[in-house]
Image (cartoon, rainbow, N blue to C red; front, side, top):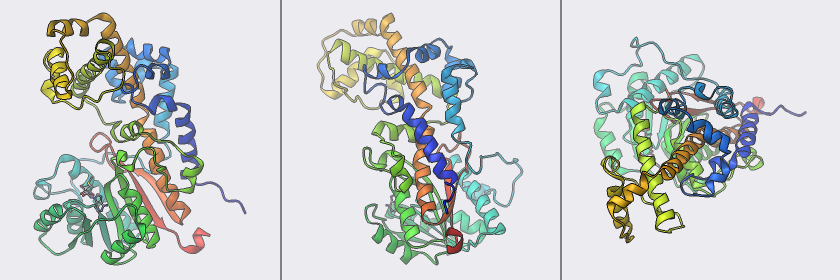
Length: 428
Ligand SMILES: C[S@@+](CC[C@H](N)C(=O)[O-])C[C@H]1O[C@@H](n2cnc3c(N)ncnc32)[C@H](O)[C@@H]1O
């Protein structure tokens, strides 16, 4: 008897079809592939953004509203990207500000950034709910647990025992110093990403039972896939995982682990993986203005290298400090060129004059607008990566749901994978 494809499988297919349609837009970074990148962006799209005021551009870039380009082809595409998240089993909803027994006290907040406080409170409250409803959560193993803030507070608040497994010995020492009661055990271990059998053994040696909730908060790059594969191999009954730093997955490699991802494969360059990691944060107006300034100098120096100094290959000028973008463009150029060992006999005044020419500013603006368009695709790429993980778990007999656990503006990598092993009869 044929079975219906799962929600995650259908969504992976949908995300894949969507992304392949706009491959040339998101695959490459606008700057690195200048001038070819111009060919990937329909000129009417670029014009539409170009004609907007800065405030309107910000509304779009920060995803606050697409109303400035209402009823255009571009706004339909952006809305389509947003709608790709409609299948999520839960959307983040801000609960009331009334404190609950999951709210951290002032003492418990000490030393934790706002983002970490928020994540920990949300996870404690979710796990508490699950524990009370149907799940057999009696213990946990927090992998890549850092200094163990989540482990410590989860154990304290919900009165459950757990293990915090972390490869960095300094974090382990610091984490141990923070625990008062022995409800969390620290273990310093590295899960080798290429060796699932060894990773399985490490988890087996550290877990209390197969019923431990296998937690991973912001398990960077390949660590998420290693944890998922090792947990499945060990028949761990439940898992909650958040990925991050997708660039570390290794661009150009076959990133997918599920059978579904082989069918709907997505070639992911380093630029695409970076986009999946960075995009869709809640950009404030001040952040936008800074980004505008940084991009203006970054695009400017690249055009200067290309058009004036004749450097036709992309040269990475590296990141700068905030103050590098505050002074004249020529000061920024001289600093970067000297760092790169590139000779330039052009006077500062001439460089600044070149920079402020209408055609140069026009090109910079166009590239900035292309970047705004490209930026929107980050979430869709991230969804493909997470759906692949969900499909892998489903293919191996886990009921798997993707949901938003955190406020995206506070913690942008907010989609978690929650998987529970089905009994054999249900799987068949
Ligand atoms: C982004 S941090 C997240 C830390 C913590 N979970 C949190 O959210 O605050 C990822 C952590 O995973 C650890 N890590 C990365 N790869 C690992 C591996 N293969 N085995 C064990 N720990 C690993 C890192 O040392 C780091 O502390």
